[in-house]
Image: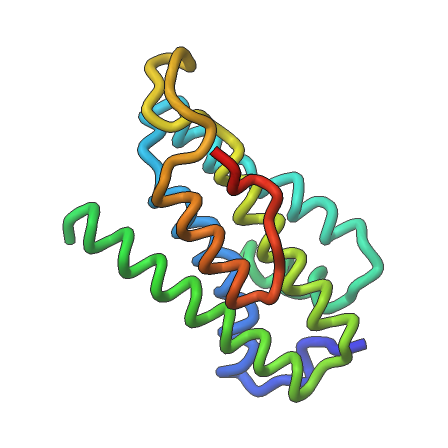
Length: 157
């Protein structure tokens, strides 16, 4: 199983940073308001805890390492950075990891994205009204799914 020592410093930073960028990109894609944004901010905690409890050393090391413009522009920047880092991370793992590392990491990133998107209704006020997933969130999840070679079950309207 791949561990931190199997990667260069630059490769490790890519693997370490991609989960954060995925979370931020999906959160920035929506328009949840204060309470929705708070829900989205804590949504990844469950996936991180699962990674910590799991038997994949690579995901545990990434989690351990993680401890230590205008809205449109920010959204685009995060979206592009998340997809680029996710793509680079998978390429690194395909070269230096095992197939189960590639699958575990891709599943982990998609789970993070889906949990953030599912954390709050978009366009609601104090939890009333709104829709479960905004169009930008659906689009970003679909794009991430393509990058990761994964399907997501939450893209339906």
